[in-house]
Amino acid sequence: MSTTAVRADCAADPAGTLTFDLTGPVAAAPASTLLLCRRGAAGAKPGGTVRIPLGDFGPGRLRAVLPASTRLAEGRWDAYVEERGVEGTRALEPGLRDLRALVDRSPDTGAPGVSARVPYPTVDGRLALRCWVRAPHAEAGSVLAGPDGMTVEGVLYGATAGEGAAVEARLPGDPARTHTVPLTPAAGSAGSFTFTLPYAPPAAGPVPEAQLWQLWLVPAAGAKGVRISRILDDVWSRHTSFVYPAFPAAPGVLATPCYTTDNDFCLRLEPAPAGR
Image (cartoon, rainbow, N blue to C red; front, side, top):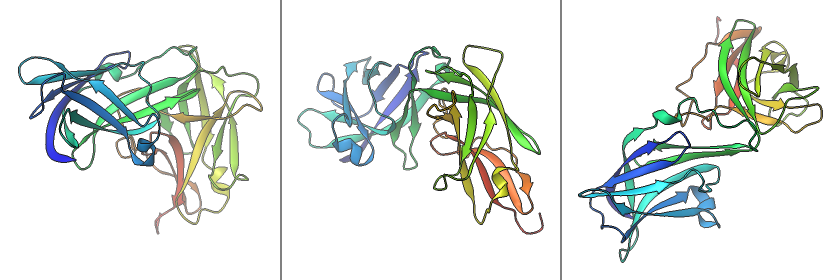
């Protein structure tokens, strides 16, 4: 791969279509192509690469359009430019990113699921896409972290909450440690829900080290759980940007609502520091 970078400005529309405007030392259209490659071993499998034609867009600029209808598997996709007759690819350097249209998206709750793509800069200065494909999907909204528990509002897509609907807090690797609370319909758009999860029941067991309890919405008794996440806006990773206060959940244990690097919503339990 060539080390010469090409700058890419990105813009999104409300439907999720992404536009890439490239500037830099790159051959004019139609000799160049925007290449999206799924990160890791998945990039070498069928569907692991997507090529988008580049067209002229003013002096020294090329444009590629990624329609919202283009299928991209969930994961992280790195962006490059390919030039006809040139060996290898060139990395894309992130430029301006106008993603305002992605904020507070409200897809059709009756659709089978949702998808989201957010361009972002990698830690080593390259352009990439974070893609989600969820069917069905439970979108987290407002989170009120209180001293005894947290109250969460959200919207369910691709499924309907019925009798016995609940939210389960699950500790990965230990199926016996699951705590269930009822799901309540909420005012607002179709599919709106709310639930309150107290901290004490999950913290009743041993917490020798930090634990991430996954939160799953179960639409009806016996139904398959739907992971609760927040993906319908312009934030590619909430892990460090959405920070909630920690509260005592049990003697020597702190509880904190949090998001993972993949924007999945969790409850973190961890031993309290000495003296707290």
